[in-house]
Structure formats: structure tokens, C-alpha cells
Image (cartoon, one colour):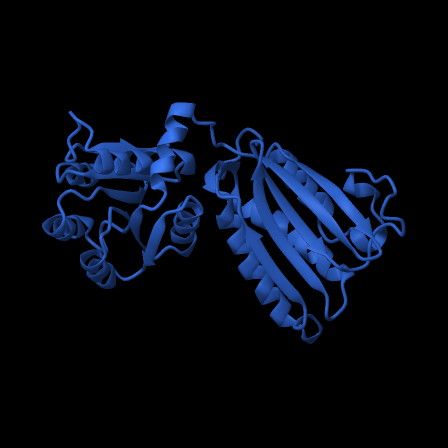
Length: 309
């Protein structure tokens, strides 16, 4: 990012994708001719990147608008994201009018060379945003049956050591309860843990979550709560009253303060500062479950930990 840009910060890529998705859906509803367009998103990129989430959202909207210009009333547009070799790979695909009649023609990664009907809707701006975030934008393929743009952005995630990575194997078959009213964070944690074989329950209501905690043999709790609105110290008291040995991870945004540190004294708690590295959280969860399963000697279940960026 350029020096002096105040909006640059670590953030989860799904945040920007969800914002772009919601805004584009509203855009499709504005005109009669776009109401029949099929639009789907598939997001498997879940790590942190550094930059301005508002700019990444705008960049995606530029590309989506470009696809919308090229398709007909019954066209299809797909927005997907995955991770590969330390990079986030974002694809914007459509089945509209292609750029080249021959899909095997050589193409330039400079979008300024594109034909008139494929530029003028923000492609140059999209390229500038991607470059400011240390990434690149490519015209992956284009022909008479559609076009695919690929955006590659560097991840902040660091590769874990083999020893720490091994800890995540304990997540498999574990029983985890997630309490969160944040659609993005809750879904991110649920999907990531389920991919590693965990049995996960995601609940927004704290009352329903407590009932499930009593009924199910939960091994670990992840709670994303507002300290003023939902009073996490009361939640911790209720959980420990039922099962004092169950580790609890509390997610919060902002600086650490005395109120949050007070919760550490209640034991079996890990404080997680948002945004966070998902791999580090997986390692911490795996280690917590390992301690439960193996009852490692010399390790107290009431020992407090803190995980941050």
C-alpha cells in the first residue's frame, strides 16, 4: 500500500467479498433486464490480507460490472476465491461476450489493451487497486463462451512449523460449539473446522447455545461476543458451572483492556484479538483438544492463554 493511506490494515478477505456480493445483488435488482442474471459466490480463501477492504470491495464490483456489461439477460456470473502458495486467488467468471474470437490467442495482462466493450467500467481502476495491494490482475481466459479474470493478492498468513501443524490433527472428530452473531466470522470458523473433520455447531443465540452445551458433549467453545452487550463474564460463569474443564476461546475486536484481562482469571480461556491468523487459531484449538484427550502431565486445564495477531 502507498505510504500515508490510513485505511490499510489486516482484514479477512471474505469480509470484502461479502460486501461486494451484497452490493452487486442489490445492483441486479435495480433493472428489469438484470433480474434474470444468475450470480453465485464460492469462497474458500479465509486468511488475512493487508490493505483497505473498501477498496478490495470496489475492485470486485468493477470486475462484476464488467461481466454484467458483457452478458445477456439470462447470463451467469461467478465470483470465487481460494488460496494457493501464499496468495489469494479471486476469479470473476461470466458466460458473456468474450474478448477474443480465438480462446487460444495470446493476451496481455494489461487491461488497457482490452476492446471497448470490456473496459470503461472500472477495469483500469481495478488494476490500480490490485497493484496498490501488492497483487496482479490477469485475463485468465476469454473466448466466445465467456471470460475469466484472475486477481492474485498476497496473504499475511505465515507457514506454521511442522510441529505446530501436527497439532491441528487433533481437531478431527472433536465437538466444538461456536457462539457468534457475525455471519462472516462464524461461517469462517465453522467451515474451516468442519473441513478438518470437526463436528461443529454454530449458534447465534446465547440461550440456545447454553442448552446445546448442556445436551451435547462439547469439548471446546468459541465465542464471539460484545463485552458490553452480552456480558462474556456471565457466559464464562455459566459454562464453567456446567463443565469447568472445557476450554473457551473469546474473540474480541480492539485493544486489550482491564475488562478483558479480568476474564483470564476465570481460567480455561483464550483471548483472541480480531483480526487473527486462522492457522494460529487452528493450532491453539488443536493444542487445547490435545490436552483434554491426552491429559498431558504438568499442564493445567485452568491455565490461561492469550492469542493475538
